[in-house]
Image (cartoon, rainbow, N blue to C red):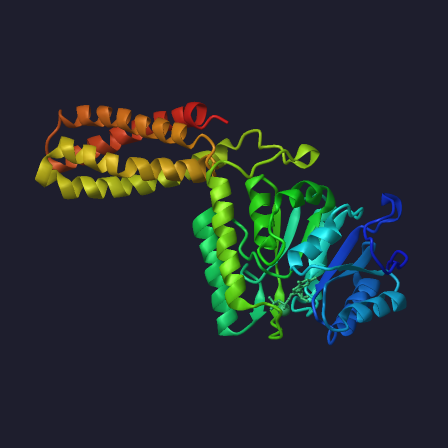
Length: 394
Ligand SMILES: Nc1nc2c(ncn2[C@@H]2O[C@H](COP(=O)(O)OP(=O)(O)O)[C@@H](O)[C@H]2O)c(=O)[nH]1
Ligand SMILES: [Mg+2]
């Protein structure tokens, strides 16, 4: 459908003006892949030539392969228009992507593993939201609804465990950090890549975590994945490096770092999302009311109504503030954390004073429960206003 720009075959990469750069540069990182490289790139090339609506280029990046990968790569670049090669003398897939993506004049930079485990029909959904400006990064996902994945139990287990760990530590939204099928707008890459420290397998995870932390939009594409058991990954070593990477980035984020100036590519915050906030606040409120009420009824006979109310509300105040901070007001990091907690808990305690006062005037289970629900309800309305306009004001 479209023609590829003219072929060039050797380093240095990334020269040339924006004028003749393609819209998408698809990087294929390779290390000792002499047996599959030619077939895979030929298949990708045929796909792009016949089925892909944007201008494109394929960049094969070899890091110090010890077999004939580099010669094969050069031969492909000579044979096929729109294929170029780049060679680095140090290993590391992250390093390969960084080198090929930096100073790249395409609109979008992408990569895919040479084994073509990801079905190519996911390529357009990966690239289109970046070309249109809808998203900043796009990732293939084997763990998103709609994905179909054929892989063995060991890999499935490792992948799910790793991604679950990320969720616990970072609360991230993307579901699959490690799918070898990703893309990013080049203008975003210019800001993001210098912040990513890893040069090997953790590179992808670090990139995505930094993107989310800085408010960028990550588009997930469910993929069809047929696992290729031939692997360059040393599992134990890579798992250890990943854990070290997680610890390093967690330290970075928890100490308040990892946020930087995105200049013109920053996403402007929403003017106002009152409707969503109110509904989320109501959900959190209903849940904590149920928990508080149960605690109240359990403790009432032992310590009396006023004390039971005090214990029940205090017990949920912290969790309630946590949930509202995170889900209602969207603070998923440490910004003003102590101020938020002090404010949130203080408002809960003030409300407690009111409901205790009301409780002293009634007796009997039903009356107590009704009075509690009424006073908690009133307090809640006031609380929402105070949280929104005071504690969590941006
Ligand atoms: N450039 C480069 N590519 C690498 C390196 N290590 C692995 N790759 C490539 O990264 C891709 C994914 O590797 P693979 O072994 O299939 O990983 P797996 O699918 O997770 O087992 C393949 O295209 C590899 O050739 C490296 O050090 N440098
Ligand atoms: Mg593979």
